[in-house]
Picture 1 (cartoon, helix red, strand yellow):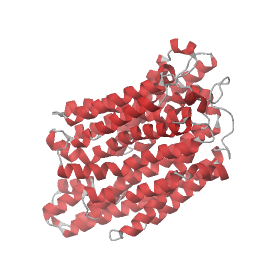
Picture 2 (cartoon, one colour; picture 1 turned 180 degrees about the vertical axis):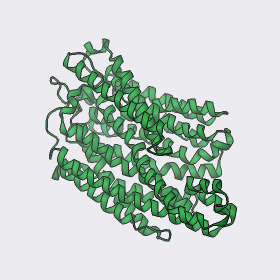
Picture 3 (cartoon, one colour; picture 1 turned 90 degrees about the vertical axis):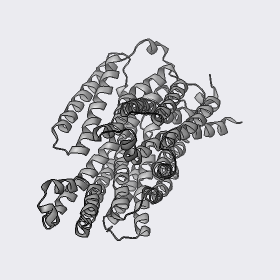
Picture 4 (cartoon, one colour; picture 1 turned 60 degrees about the vertical axis):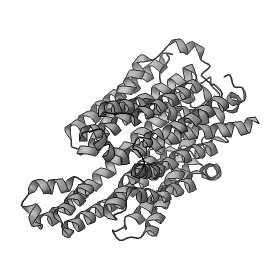
Length: 528
């Protein structure tokens, strides 16, 4: 097999690994009701099944990038895949909520290793000219996992033992392990002198800051932005992250071995690309949070059909992601990313006109438009960022990109979820007071306001078509307002792209001064 062909097969191998991690994240959301009954899990434990995974993911992204650079990226990827597969099996055979939570925490660390090393592989395997196309393939694997989780998981939960939802990861992991062993060469940083020095302070500070900040975002999404725990966590997280940045700057200037070489951020392409990739992901994740609720609670379809209705989501993403490299090469990163955000804004505005009776075709069209813009913007932004990474620093550089991605996902959910919740609650105030059963029982009215699912359940319990109509109308209005907010965020993203990004990515290497990009050579000479 030629080096060129082997390189692309290796990319498919790491993309398959990323696909397994992505499917697991989306499967969990639809499995929570089943887990509540099987494992006798409380509401708090159910929340931690998801939150704990995200927190460990946030804690691990930068350290695993460093470990890959220092000790070997292939080793870290293999270890991460093994642990992820073992964690999946432990989830499937858990008999208590505590066992399941431990497995999820372990999988969070392993998932970070897979995501960061997979993106690092793009930098190591491909030169600057071919990286945009490779990033498009990598991004496509991420996007494909979003609807596959609900579709496959929904079918499995309806027809098979619940544990198969998690055991599904095991054969995918096995295939990934074999492909990595056979196709991916070992690579590591050549700075042998740095391997004896480890930035322990930076590792601990980055992990603590990202965990606390991410927890604050999750708490804000669950309890509102004025919640004391959310505000305190966000503030403490920002302070710790600021201290981390100052420590890294000092260590870099003193000639130490920092976790993050702050000279990476001198590159507008890297800093702007990594940041804007996170912004592009916010709206996409927020859409994924809102639309299944609309399909199921408002339009009355089951989980499986809801998953099928998300297929335009993937179609749009692929339409935007796959040609992103060619478009960026012709018109530049600045114009491409700005255009992508404008497409997101247009699609979001079209979506804001959706009502309860809107047909599938119209919804599919505007979802595809939004996701085409997101796919184009996210892929072009990531390409701009990784174009500035050298093979020497690909692990930690990829860790920074993934850190922004992993924090932007809960942030997008929290922002748009808060908008939906606020509008939903406000819209229900008058209808609830007009329903005698709820006017006489404030506690029942409070339950209705907690979520659209709770409202629909209460309407069925009370046999009240008026309440069911009010709940569905209120949620739909909240969704429309959230899409307008998403359009506003997209416009801000377009302005940021014009201001921050260079037209072309060649604004200086993002690594150390003595480093030179070494993509293809690193692949052509494998050492393990």
